Length: 309
Length: 297
Image (cartoon, each protein chain N blue to C red):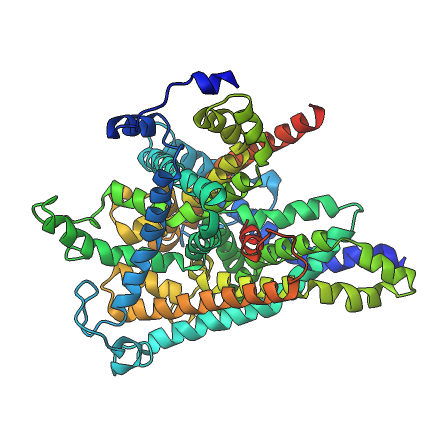
């Protein structure tokens, strides 16, 4: 068009005009945003890496780096994670709760997800609504209500390991439902209907068609439940009766408020590795199972990101 | 008959579990908050029959939270901290989510993993990391005195509101970035191309197309992190521990674990839940309105 021809040849923009252009339109060039993004990533991850570094410190300091050692993991005969009975107990308690949580919450959640997706009668709407509540209830409200439940109603249970397991399962079920339901929607009903047309009973359509198709979601939700159970602090603390029922996050909390040793960093590092390993495993299984199902440009990372919400 | 009960039967264990361990506990909180206190043992006596509920304690707590009460400061401080932390989180989180969704190109998957990773790192581990960094002889103070920004180390962990707010931002921002990213990533780029074709500048495309289209993500993410922030007590405990930075969650914690007065603690929990239900209700209402408008237009 003629406009292009009439436009004067622009001189090389001076630094000032480029700066003004940037001020007027900081979104014009992605560099500014790239700086913020990478700055954010560094800010969010480096502090944790420094905390991991100090778990390998050779001295009692968590602020002065004085050489690499593994004394806070097992070398120190008194204060290391391996030798300090309170830290070892906390680790065992955290793992105990997480395993029990996975074993109980995953099947209940899978059944609830299938039930809610297929059941359209009276009560299904309110059940759906009820399932969403634990996801948005602040943990302190759940902590208070479960504590009062076990001290005022189910007094024969009281606080302690059993109460902690029941509490963990309560907040985990909804996560399983959300993950499995997403998968149910994406596979649709046609496979089951085809099986029914070929004469399969509802039960065998379920065990031979639906369950294998749901497997990636079941494994992923088990991994997520393991991770959120290990990471949980509030419910574990409110339902703990102290001593041996304190989990690792509860120990980190009380140690941080007193005078923490690098062994606190060490046990926190162990937990972090466990959680990240469980999530990575869940992610890899998910990706392996759903390979070939993804449309072009749709990454498994994004699937996993969507799971979290 | 068999088919009719099959699917509800699948849902049954989960529904029963949630009724017994989610709804009943909440009713217990109400029964304790609206109950009485044993005059001799100072123990909470729950009242289970709604017709006999005693509103005395709840009234007292509402008065204490209202103007001139001894919990007024805590309530206002909580709202103030959450508001500032939320604003800062949006200010940092939105550009990050925007960049990853729209401009990151080949680094998109890597950045997404790096942004998701903190969600799976224990919250207390991440707070512990900052306690190490902000210690009197920690890296932050050493850096600031080395560069002569500060002449002597500052006591960051001695009850500073700024430390608590930054810790809240650090703790909750990953939970905001993900819904923001999802909302921005969903926007159909043909809308943006249409705006550019019609002569809008990049900035006005952003202002008039991208921003309005990402509003549900902003609102959803903001509610998602505001709810747990309002109930937070461990963050101020860990990075400050001083009464001048305590939030409403710390008061609840105090009435249960400090000097056990569960009736007052339960009453504060009821008031907090009512307040959060309002926020939740507003959010659900906006979603409802948006879907209705989308259907009619």
